[in-house]
Length: 450
Image (cartoon, rainbow, N blue to C red; front, side):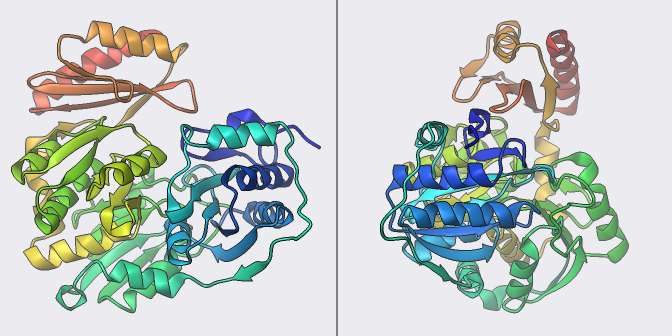
C-alpha cells in the first residue's frame, strides 16, 4: 500500500496532483478515514467534471461501502449541489471529488458533516489526514448499499424559492461555464426564469482546453468581456469548474470584483432581513462595512476560506457573507456558499431597480479604489509578512488573517497562502492617487523578499 502524501490536506479541503499526489489508493484511504472520523450511516457522494474524477469517485465509494456506509451517488454536480443533497436527503455527511478552480492535473475532496456543516483544517481535515497516513483500514461485515439520486430539479426548486419569480424580467446574459458542471443547472434554471443565454465554453470538459478554469485570473476574463460587447448582452456571468464561485461583468464587459458584489448583496439582505450580522472579508471591506453600518447591521471580519466562513456563518447566524474571491454565503442556503444564488439575486436586483448592471456598481467604483490581488513568491512567508507589518505600521491593526492595517485614507492586507510560499497583497484607498502611491511603496518593499 502506498503512503499518503500529507501535504494534500489543506486548510479548506484536500487537493493534489493526479496521480502522483492523489490517486485511487489515496481516495480509498481518505474515504475510509472520513468514515471513521465522522461515523456516518449515509453519505452523499458527487464529483466535478475532471478526467480523473470517475476513478477517484469509484475508489472513494468503495472505501465508504467497505466501511459499512450507505452511499447516495448524485453523479456529476456543482459542489453546492452536494451541500444541498446532504441537507435535503438528511444524510450524515457528504464528499465532492473536486479540485475547484485548480489546473486540470489536480483533483481532491471537499467534505462536510450532517447538515452540510464544513470540515476544515481546524475541525477534522487533519484528523482525517492522520488516520489516512497511518494506513487506517476497516472492512465491515455488513457492506454499505449504493443508491443513485438525481438531485437537480429539487436543487433548482430551492434556488428559485429565494426570489419572486413573477417579478423577474428577461435579460440577455453571456454565461461562461468554463467547461465545468454549471451548464445543466443554468439550463434547468432557464426553464423557471426568463432569460436569453449566450453560452461560452458550455460543454463539460475535464481537460479544460483553455487553461485553468478560474475567472479570477485576469487573462481568463477577456473572452467573456469581448462576447458581452459583441452580443449586446445585459451582463455576463462566469463560474469556476465546480461552480461554487460566481463572477459578474457589466454590459460594457467590465469585470466586477467580488468585493463590490459582496457590498451590493449585503444591502439586499439587510433590506430583506433588517439589521443583521454580515461576514466581511479581512482583505477588502470598507465598501461592505459602510453598507452594513448604513442599514444598522453588524459587520464581522473572519478568516479567508470557505470552510472558515461557513463555520462562522453557522455560529453567528449571519444572513450573508462574501469574499473577494467570489464565494458568497447565504442564510437562505443553510448558511453555506452557493454559486447560483448570487445570479438569481442579481436578476432580482436588476428587475426591481430597472438599472443597468453598470449603474448598480458605478457608485462603488467612484468611492472605493482597489488593486487586483497581487501575489509574490517569497523566500520566507512569515518573515515577509512580519516585515511589512513593521514597515507599514501605525494604523488600526487586525491579525484575524495575516496582517491588515487601516489608515485614514488607505488600507492593506498581507497574508500568506495556506498552500504555497506566496504572500497575497490587497489594498484599498479613498482616492486613485493615494492607492497608486501606496501600491508603489508596498510592492517595492515586498519585492525585497522575493
